[in-house]
Length: 416
Image 1 (cartoon, rainbow, N blue to C red):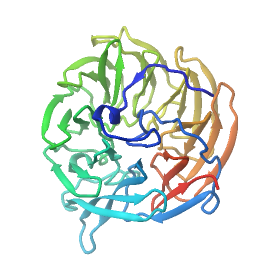
Image 2 (image 1 turned 180 degrees about the vertical axis):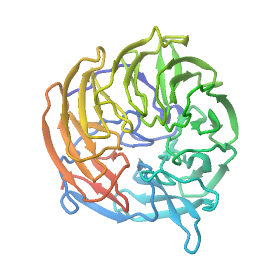
Image 3 (image 1 turned 45 degrees about the vertical axis):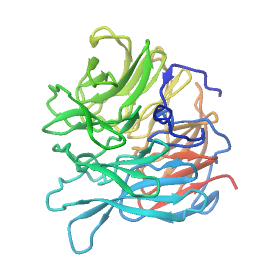
Image 4 (image 1 turned 120 degrees about the vertical axis):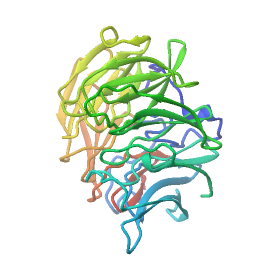
């Protein structure tokens, strides 16, 4: 199924000017930030031994997704310090071809006596790292952010942006030109910030102006270009807000009811598509050409049945794919919201975001079961594979291989 251009998604790596190949996977959900892989020959089925080029143990626990740059895989993790309640928050690098560990860097020490409790499905290292092709950026939410060189040397750290999280950290940063942008939506404060990538210094900070009863959320922003202007689309509790990348000023907002928003939005056909979080999620399609409060004027359609709390949507050409946390998969016409089909995937629960590659949709369950579907307006299940271990991380892909992170391991899966 070929993908036709549907809008302008700005690749943050290209904006930063770093050298990288089209096969790299430099941030959460890949080079477009929307879970689309344009390479070929990914495996469709595997096991812990079949089509597994290698599997390695990963220390500690982290639900950050892997990223891949020029033959290296980067991850974050949180490792308990023996005899204490503390954790070391770490970045690590593996050789993508062999799985050999190249380096492991201690970035922060978390004080276990002061650290807020996290949700049972969360970790202390859940935000996905990202790279501009020259540096690696790791983020641990309220516990701090750091820039490293690609050999693991810490260049800068910033833990100035403290807030009271609920359930721990979650959302990942994005790159915008020479800025690292991320949201901070805690119980007490809600804001979005931009740091200078070279130094970690604050460039701008914008208050969310939230009136939500429950103000905490965990979403990852998306940079788009639409109607002649660039916009940072950032969901929060009770509203999605578009910001100007240069100074963080608010461009428009659309209100909804929802909190603890996790999914990253997608963009196409002049609209952003997003899920509104707990308690009863809805998927909204919102035109991006507005100014100010566009709640009454720019929401094109709404879907409730099958809306995810956690997995991000997936836009392929004119079809929008969703997988709910309970495993209901939906295919909709993105322009109208018309449902083509809704079917059950394997597995009991879903947190990872779906992936598109070569006319196929990859869905990763929390039990480690991957279901592969044929992309299109007719439901067709192609394969199921299991690694038999819990996983919440989203898949990364590069050079014809899938990198799958479980609770204790990282797999390289490829056709053999």
